Image 1 (cartoon, helix red, strand yellow):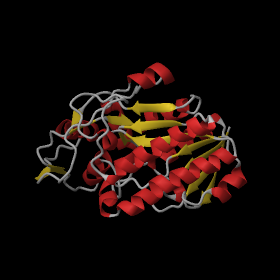
Image 2: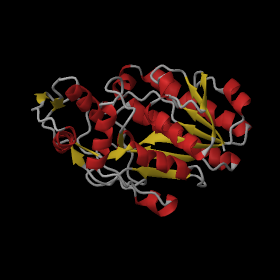
Image 3: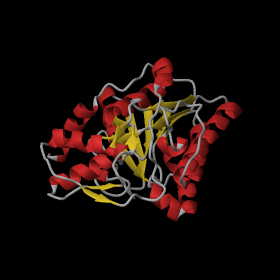
Length: 299
């Protein structure tokens, strides 16, 4: 396949590009390198340094058959501080990607978000659960999903949106919009002390990046829809910290700080639709995923 990955120099994107290279795709990466890194991109992929809001030149040169649209403004706090920029990148960037893909007859697989869209979850949220974003980031991603669905209805496309849980794994660095696993492991590796905000009982659905890549690849062959990509298991920050201690072999008491305003307390996804329709489920346990992540941190 002739494949274009927007945001392919980022955390998830670089893992996806490596998987595409392993199966022999012709791979092109569109990334402005604002948070992605050139060295993350496989030597077998062609890197096009460009803004996702102006993708036409790259699309016209590549003429992709499939587009994995991962480029985004992904920092929740930044979305609160600059909601106009968040919408510009995540909404306008998605519309222009869809239009460019339509001109070349390409399908789009869109990387969306679970926790930021559903809001507080007392139980695993299925795709039809109420959607209550607490930050502009979740709203902009939900808007992107609706544009995909509209393009499917309007043009008969087969675009798919995946609502991802809290993704962790190799290539995720401990700064910027990094997840808690990368932050904790980065501090422990450097001799620092991780900080837990609030009582640490906040729960998340932690899903390993290799499992997410598998879901992205499976979604590329599916005829449209929205699917959760998570484990269905809620893990508290305290439980996660204990698991990281097992993976790293470092026993260091964390610091505690006041809760952060607006932070979700409960977030977990129901992945049963993805298992039913895509034949996908997460196969990497938290302990295994953390061990593999720690091995990468130590490289």
